[in-house]
Amino acid sequence: MVHVQGSAHRGGAGSGWPENCLATFEATLRHGWALLEIDLRTSKDGVIVLMHDATLDRTTNGSGPVKDRTLAELRQLRLKDRQGNLTDHRIPTLDEVMTWARGKTILMLDKKEVPVKEVVAIIARHRAESYAMMLAYTLAEVLECHALNPDIMMEAMLGTRARYDEFAAAGGPWGNIIAFVGHTATPDAELCRLIRAKGARCMAGTSRNLDLEFLQGRVATLEPLQAGYRAVLERGVDVIETDIPRELSPWLHAGPPPAGSAKARFFKLGPP
Image (cartoon, rainbow, N blue to C red; front, side, top):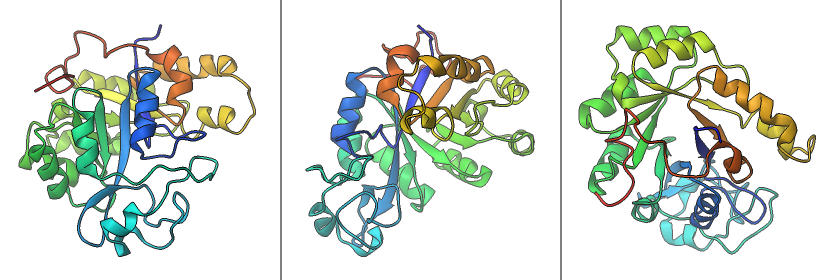
């Protein structure tokens, strides 16, 4: 067993399981422990809901911008699965997911257009610093979040040496981040080494490369791809963000997070 954590991209969509859906999250976790990366949008009446796209067309039986529909209107829509099949599942609110997630998993909040201060406020309101992280796209967002609440962990975009240098020069909070080093099957091993030397950990995405070999039917099982996933880990990656968490989980990680993590105070599962 490889002692690495998986991050379920958009919660782990699949056949019968829509992305950003509570039932999907439950199905993902039944197959093994994983972070759940979820996407935030705001309804017309100011409620934060889970939705990746700015529009409803691809993932629901609705159409048009999410921001033009009230929560009540969004509740009437049904979600589609990865293949575009309509399901009986509905759009959840972030408050619902935050309440559900306590003691079950860690949420990675991809805020999209939601302001940093709003994400920080909702994490604080739920007292969720131990199980909810914010995805920060820029150094400015990292610093803003850290200034507002220094107990919040973040995913920071550090996929290039230039971004690493910028973060280091600004005195970025290495103890509060996991560094996303890119969507590539060959992450920069030296960059990962530098980040880990600062006390942070590294995440890489396989959703745009290795996962596609399986999802697009070029391989029937993950067996031919295991060497590729292992190569990602050997370059210094600690967490793999994947579109196939249920299929990958038995190989990556089938239990709770490894003991002895330097981030234990942030990654504590269970009641606060």
